[in-house]
Image (cartoon, rainbow, N blue to C red; front, side):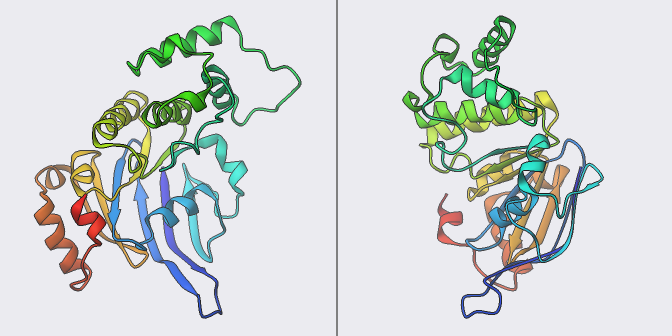
Length: 264
């Protein structure tokens, strides 16, 4: 479903502030893979997601989604088959619009926009049932402005919106980092549920090694803009944080993970 072939990206090339963020990055995801991505600060995790989403053009390499070469396809052209949830709960929704209006926007992603806006009775019923699956009582608050919701509630709605059109790829960019531990656990459980029920191919960036081990069927670790570890199946299930630290040290030539990754 996703192929990254020899991807390179340098920001501010030719200047004293030049930063090579991706360096010969190669990664392949099969349909239905749920891959957790971990690594130190500056390892290239979020940059990789931005490259997949089309937030910038890569310097070299090829990006294929479901066999289609999207390397030079602009971000808005990829939006119809990519769902994304950001770290900041405020980024995935329109605060001044109602919950049902936000869901309607997500449902119309990729469609031509006309003058007619109304939400049909059938749509409203579908949105109510979707919200009911969150078990947050939001099905009774569909006309509430999203800006009135808590961070966890808002992130849960964003997850629904990102998966509503069953995208070819779901990108989760540290989507629980800004939440308290209890809320983060609930949003992660919801993520697992949505990914499994919709059979979504997913990349989830996290700084939390325990979460990286507990979720998904594959774990990828990045360092210096490339993949240095790729662990799947039974091997992944048996991993511990200590194993992960030891393997990272060996794969990266003794470099240590950031304190944020170790302490999460």
